[in-house]
Length: 188
Image (cartoon, rainbow, N blue to C red; front, side, top):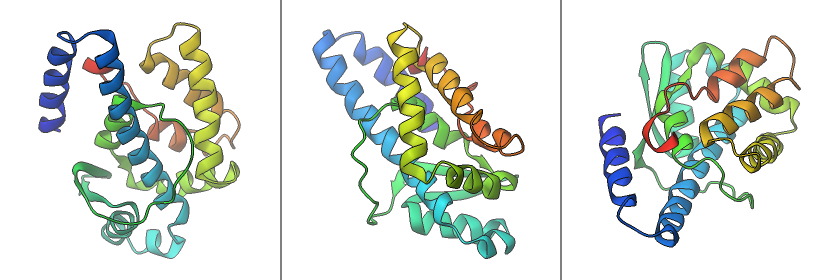
């Protein structure tokens, strides 16, 4: 987390010194990395067998790490993901433009409550999988950005809109994954 804050500050300072074309190029690179990390976590959660979840947080973390390619640790009741320690695995390609950038990094950095993994898996299933869920959120995210909302507000509104399409008892898990209240710096 400390590295993330330092990198965010460095990025913010450096971005002030470049013209808008360079900033757009750097931002796109950040967007792509953040998007792929979110996608990898969602795909791993979508595919995790329920018996792994039933075996506890250690096995759940290990399975998600092996299947997402992101170092996964347990802190209290949350699974945390380290973007600086990626493993080389074959992550399925999804041809969707990147949309979450630094927000995606923050989502992964904030972690996921272990108690909500199964509910998040079910919410993903209600959408027909990770691709459809991410496409839905991206669609609304783009709409809210076109209306002039910041990334933080656009993602919050998009995730709330999409979460209204799942069962009431699954909404908190989906919203918790896309909880961006802690996002500051590059996202404001």
